[in-house]
Image (spheres, one colour):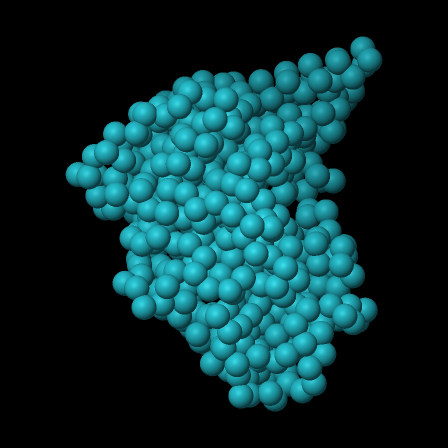
Length: 510
C-alpha cells in the first residue's frame, strides 16, 4: 500500500542513505526494545544519531553512549521537541504506550503523534519512519491496533513524508511476544486454548525489522508509504508455542480447546504465567480478534519469503538468552520516567521509614560491588528466597509485575532497566552505588540501595531500605513487615559480603 502525498514542501528527491555522511537521524524511544537496538545499527551505517529520551540517565551505561548525542524531550510536551528535531534529516517514531485503560493510552498516543507531526513540519524534517501494528483498516480492530493505525494517519497528515511499517509478532531475545510465547510454553504443559490462541499471525525476526527500519530511509521520493512486514510463516499462537517447545527441547504441549476462557480472563492467566503485567497482556490479547498477516506490499527487497523463518528466529533468540547476550528487553521502557528518588527535594519532610545494615568484608570494593550487582534474577536475594518468591506471586495476583521479569544480564545492570519487581533507579560503578526502586504494588514508594567504602584491608557494605508510606495503609504495611526485616535484610547484607569474599578467594587462588 502506497499513499502519494501532494505536499512536497521538503524539497528534492534525494536518498538519505546515498549520502550518509553528515545525515543526522533522531531516534525516539531510544531506551525501548527496538530503539535500543536500532541505534548501534544506524551508527554502523555511518549515520549521526541523536537519541531522544524523557530520562537521558537511562542511556548512561549503553555501550554506544559516547557515539551519540542525547537530548531530553517528551512528545507529550511540544515545547521540548524543537531542540530534539533541530538539524535532523529524519526521525524514527518509536513512541508507544500499552499500559493503562484503552482510552488513556489512545489519548496519550494521539497527543504525542500530533505534537511530533507539527514539530517535524516546523523543523523541515525529510522523513519520519514509524513502526506500527499489522491489521486491515476496515476490520473491527482492537482499541490498541486502531490506536496504532491512528498514529500513522496523524503523522502522515503533516507535510513530512512518512514511511509506516506494520508488524505483528516480533521475535527476538527479550521481545514482548517472544517472552510471552516462551513462558506460556515452558510454564504450562497443558494449554487451555481460548479463541485467540487460534488466531493466525505472521511473526518476523527482530533482526529483519531492524534491517528494514534502516533500509526504508533510502527512498528518494517525498511520499507517504505504508508497508506490511512479516516473515515467511503464517502461524497460530498454538502452532508458535508447539514450535517453541520443539526448538527448546520440550515435550509437545497438549492444547485443550476451552472457549469459556475469554479475552477478559486470558490476560489474568497470561499475567500469572509470563513476565507480562496484566495491563500489558490485555491490549496484546485484545489485538488478536482477527488474523494479523501481511496483506499489502512489503518494502523492496524484503518480501516475506526472503526473511528468517519463525524457527530460525527462535533459535537465534534462545541462543542469545543462553549466552546472556540480550541487548534490550521489552521491560526496558519506563512508564514513570525520572521518578523521584529518596534523596530528592520532593521527599523533604516526608514520612520516611528505613532499615540500615552494615556488613564488613575482607574482599575488595570491586568484588563487593560485583556481589551487589548480581542480586535478583537466577541468583535471587541471598537469603530466604522463598519469601521473595511468595511476595512476587502475591504481587502478580493483585495486578503487579511480580518476579518474572527477571533481569537482562546476570551481572551487568544499566540505569532504568527492570530487575524482577524493581527498576534500576541509579547505578554508579565508579562510586560503587546501586539504587533500586520497587515497582511491586505497595501503598507508598520503596527503594533498596547499596554503597561500598574501603575499610581496613577490605571493604564495608552499607545497605539501606527506605519506604515512604502513603496514608494509613502505607504505615500499616511497613509495621506489618518489621518482624521480617531483621532476619531478611541482616542476612542479605552478610551474605553479599561473604559472596564477595568467595570471589576474592577464587581470584587470589588463580
